[in-house]
Image (tube, rainbow, N blue to C red; front, side, top):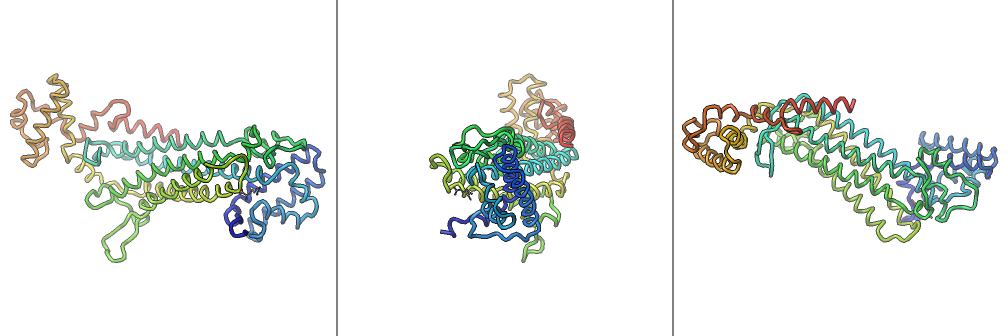
Length: 442
Ligand code: ARG
């Protein structure tokens, strides 16, 4: 029974929240004259000492005492005697754990958000530096049109800002205090739930006692937000892995973020990116795991809910590592801008620019221009050259009205510079966006 029932091995991580919750509860019991001022003073001093013991590593956590709540309460009784036995008046472990866990998740949201913002700052900084560095833009991982490296990085800054927004939304909904809902029905003592809510930094008390002790939406919302964030980090990790691979060589990472091979001395493996990609699995798993724990539970509390903590802790640890590693890689990476420009020009990446010129200058309907461009690309393919290397005569053999002016739009630099539509990849746009983000983030 003890082996399946015990949770102290993981819920010890709630100790600071448990002590904060108990101190707020005791102070409120005193203010409401439910406990005497002497008892409250003894409880508060005892709890502060226990916090110091835990911090110093001298506190003895006991499996026999099941969880963090009982461990702290029993230790308090050892230290201050009878007054400790009055602390649990007007509450239950059910509202206690719900409160502790909300406080923990709220703190985690703040920590993860700070890390997301740091990653955004790292990316926006590199984006400003590379606002004009041309690289191949892909669709279907086929060379499509040239973009700038700064533009590519700012795409992730947009994703991350939505991730931060989701965490912010989750925090706002989470920030109500279940303490005082007691076991499930509320309490007959004249407690002041507004006072404890305020003392713990919540906006208000939760409104329904049954919901208070059995709601884990806040943890699920947090894990949902982490899952989407992890998905974004995994996509970026995948790009780093591709960009570092020898056929691409668009970027390189230093020894700080790569590992060597045990038998192939030339290799530098992007392990930090690979592990970031892989840890997505445990984060998604945490969300699915907790959704499954919750899905069949009747009102109100059931011990199933003790299984809410490990997935949240594990996902938090994983996302924190992934964010730190990704920010580290972004700051560390060296972009091979010559190689980027070379690949940006391969694969007929300026074919759209040719078609656009036919539309703009010759007033061709776009569909016809698309067809003419296709013929010119096939001609270039047959001669094994880029379209910019064809002669004017070659071009005119397909469309006689083409003039030498066409060669002005076929370079990758001209291509990106022309993409001035709002949100487009023109270096001036990218520089302005990077500047906006840098101002916002610093
Ligand atoms: N360790 C428990 C949990 O995490 C605390 C609540 C226990 N409540 C109870 N009625 N047994 O859920």
